[in-house]
Length: 297
Image 1 (cartoon, helix red, strand yellow):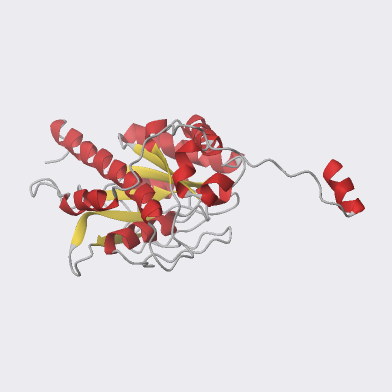
Image 2: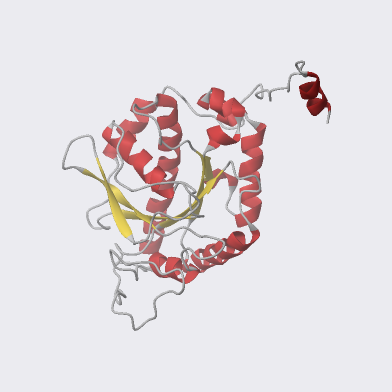
């Protein structure tokens, strides 16, 4: 009311106090280590007798930034802005088919030993069926499977991969959520996501979460990406996501996706590489655990 009165009188109102960064970061990240992280990533390899690649399955609300995260990882790895996965934020899922994305190294023709799978977004009315995400986790969806918002496919469907091998199954499930959506997740969408997290737990698949659009959610981060772990608001969003989905805070990473930039930024890259390293390490641990338990040959 006071601000409206100032506007009516035509005089400047009191300045709105800008949030202040914390004196110390609550999570440490070495901002100058971009080349070191890229070096680790380029040297990362799987044992030849293990499997061909790690499979990273992304899911989340429509427009949360799943495809943009794939593009951002691809951009960092190729050292240039790329757009291999179609992405567009309009509140409606742009992804309609099940597709595998390989990530090429800066050297043409060489690929990293991990792949991403993107699925149709979860929506309040429509979107991907939870059952289809469960099928994807188990490796039952064939490449190019077209998602149907009305129903998941049935066991007799010819598009079913009846005998998935270890390369078809997801090694990690990553939830992608925008940080600038207020309460993060709507009740109906949250209910669907909880069913998915429970299924992943029952299948023994580890889980992580990526919090996108952090610069749109917090003015401190918009001012400088390096403020991300000095922002109380971002930490609060991460804790809120932890309480909603039960994913440990150590497995939740804030990032800014590339979407309008035409050149790479070292600080943006560091957040993406930090999240990617954790994803890869957890997925690799999952493969080793499955081998010990005799789940895979």
